[in-house]
Amino acid sequence: MLKVKKKKMKIKNFEEIKAWKHAEELTVEVYKIKCKTAYGIDIGYKDQIQRACISVMSNIAEGFERNTNKEFIRFLYIAKGSCAEVRSLLHIGQLLGYISGNKYEELLKLATNTSKLIAGFIKYLKGLKENKL
Image (cartoon, rainbow, N blue to C red; front, side):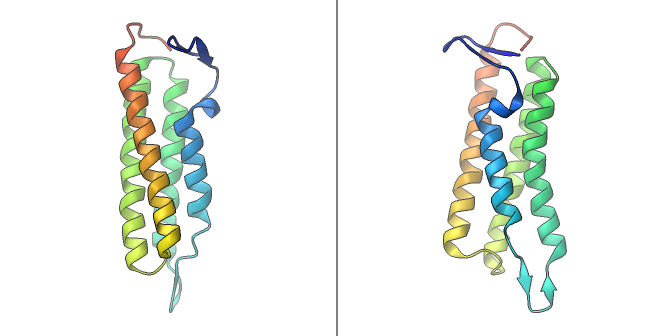
């Protein structure tokens, strides 16, 4: 259980973490991308971007369950890296015509905000004196 001292609240499970909620939303929206080509669906691209999104969510969850700040921070860095992978894949998806301009901007903004939330959480956890969540 993570103790957030400034607001005197406790995060009891990873589903309460704002960055995880944003990652979940990003994942759901990415799963809606069609990835159509003249030859069918680009399975490789679709699989890679979906896996990267799942990685963001899963690493936040797994890190939280490790019950130490050090381990949680390590997993948050992995989640942040996966978030960068999603952004990179969004760029190529837009260039290939898999993602329209508006949808691309929406997903890119969501991925960027998720990354910022993760970075803020890392900074907060690094500032805690205790080593246990």
